[in-house]
Amino acid sequence: MNKTIQAVIVSSILSFSSAVSAFEESSLYLIGELGKADTDVEGIDGDDDDMLAVGIGYQLHQYVSAEAIWSDFGTISDTVNDATEVDVEVESLSLSIHGYYNRSSQLVLYVRIGLDIWDMDISSSDLPSDSGVDFVWGAGINYQLIERLAIRGELATRSFQADQSTDAEVNSWKLSLLYKL
Image (cartoon, rainbow, N blue to C red; front, side):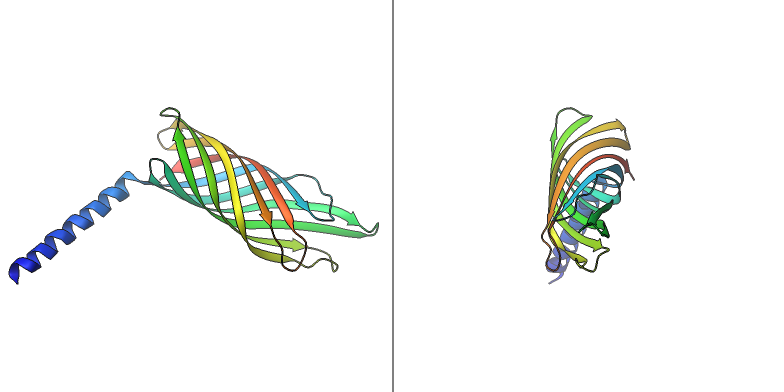
């Protein structure tokens, strides 16, 4: 009985040590993004707008990371039926996984796939606001400037399948700054 308890204690300590070691090898990082968003909503012709995003990421492995990013894709405006001014605002919370291909110690190519929890506010009585969950995917390039600081460029696309209003697609081009904690 005593040897069984000792074996459980030793295996628990080894498991905890492995978990701490894995945490130290991985890294948490903050993300700030600026870019342009091309928001296409059925029946509404709007221009590109500036976008802003902030988030947090965690490097799970040399080739894989997970990120949570809140994005504001700006506002598009249009006159519908020659009289009604319509504004559309889209925001989302993205939960995504990134897969990396290291070209060198500083240059990394990546792909991204995840889910967008989105909200589309439409200022029109004809089209109701809507929200939902849909896929996001993209690709980009990451360049390590110094040990804790990297810059990244990304193209991403989202297709929102609305339940109550009209469908939308958001394509974004963004420049990101990543800071490892």
